[in-house]
Image (cartoon, rainbow, N blue to C red; front, side, top):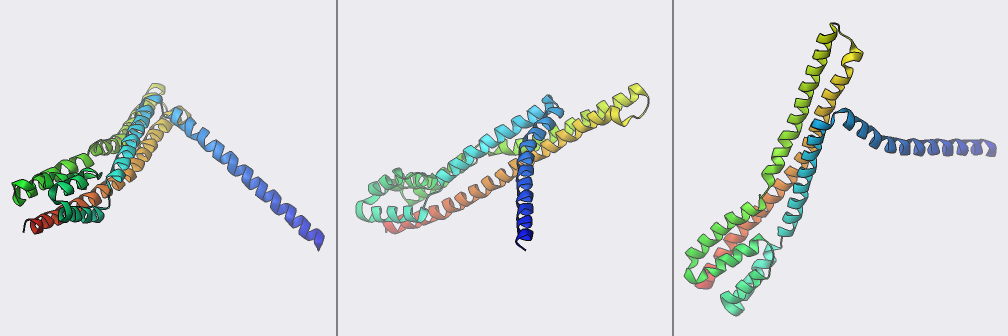
Length: 236
């Protein structure tokens, strides 16, 4: 009985060791396979597709960092402004807005800065500067959508060129030989695959960024309405 358990234990350990070794070889081989396919796809189109990925990811990372820094606790900011208005007036509230980061605080400052001209002018300033802040949030986002569109198109262009090369080889030889056109068809398919992969990756980041911008814009609108209501009560 003990001998049977020993044999089973050795067998299980052997299977686990083989599995780990295969996994490590597969992981190492994946990078090499990816590199080989990238080279086979041709340096021209594949390099441009890779450039689209690099530039698109750089913009995505910059936007994500900026948007995360732009996100603030708007309820806390509004409460601080309200307390400052009650205790020290408009100047104290402006100081609170000035020392707070984010687009909502900047909008608050612009509205408070026009407070001496009346609530209507303060509201116009809030609306106008809100548009400016929206432009800052959406800056460079159009480039991401451009790279999302360009990468698959470049892949499809590589596919068309690869097929043209394949038919040129068939026309030159005068007969259909699979080994003769296989390399051209492979190039055509690889460019399409890599172009679609780049488009999918950037599309995921793009959707996240758009959702983040929409969330911040909604917070800006709600906070702006609350500020105007606060200013109206303060004037009374």
